[in-house]
Length: 229
Length: 122
Image 1 (cartoon, rainbow over the protein chains, first blue to last red):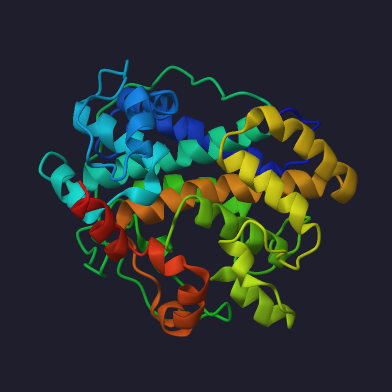
Image 2: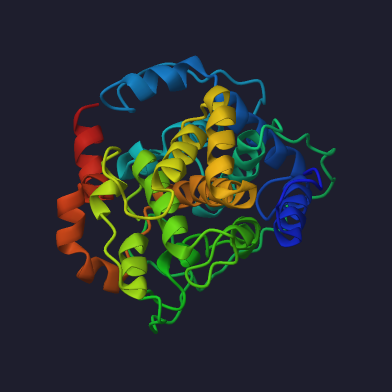
């Protein structure tokens, strides 16, 4: 996926190649074809007129209308994908509760994982001037429908992985809430964090920039995206 | 929140206001280049990112500039996971960052605050 001349770790380039393969395969609640359509929808969201108008509106929930979409996914799924891609900082509990009338929490978690994983891959490609990567043909097969029946309500919008709250020397629990957040669907956790992990560590970051420089970049991204966590 | 932890581990003072204030010097090496790379990447300003990257590479070296993009890309994804799942702050973080969150304006991003702001104005 990346030219060998770029100073990227083998771990990262291998992880991204695997991410692309995994998205093309059936997940636990969507087929490979549907998952790839979510990636396409996320890309289309960036030029969606409705998203642009919603982002300019005082409230993202104030505007009637439809997203521009060629994926033929269900319109609720398209709305989730477009909002997560273009205006994540203004997602609200009321919007989520509306979505939950049409999608199970498991389906929602898988959509978020696919979109967020593809955002990482596409963002790095675009930032390096490569353009977004092509997708291989989707693999056939049915969703496995596996999910974590022991997931718990820990104050988030979806049930999370039940994990020890023992503290690590980073000042965070050994399993921080963000690492638990997709825990309702283990394959969704594996997809997203398999993509994310080669990019960052809470300590001894395996990059050429310092931990503090990495935290500054991370903090600025969080602020631009209006992310509380 | 994490920049604060880095500050404690490094025993250095980083200006946390720089997280939400684009004009405050963060106090980290090559802060202005890191900020420019991050802003252009997250805002999708690909036209300007090329020259910004070349300036950053001249100052920091190619590997460092690319690694800044690596971190920015990762957090462009993980912030979406956090926001889409309404994940709560970890207890220790919530307890130890009360004043910092208020001072930097991060509390404005809290999910309850957003819901009150955006749902009521719909």
